[in-house]
Length: 163
Image (tube, rainbow, N blue to C red; front, side):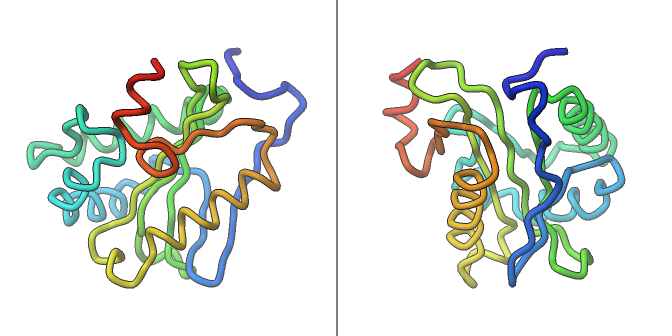
């Protein structure tokens, strides 16, 4: 089993704040996840949560493709090779975004952490709130010594030059 965490490290299951619930992303989230993605295409392409060279999402993304993506994320979480979390409203009625943790491909960081929020949540400061809460959660609950937040703590051009 491929993992970038110590084998005995218990992966945190959730994070609850006054504004959201963060928990493992699964195939059962596909309806709410697909809605969040498809109603936020322009915002996600402009905000570049995965970098300027990443074209996700597009209008051609189908429900079935999203389901496959979620299944892949769920399996990677179970294998401990990466971790995808859904960001839900406290009552879990709406997907507000996602957080992803990957092994870093460069020596300067031990994890790459990226996140996004749906377009309807931008004006109320959810993006900044999510970023602040996730940074604190990672600092307090995860074993990473040098987590990287590309596109946030380090610009994408600088990030790409590290690889």
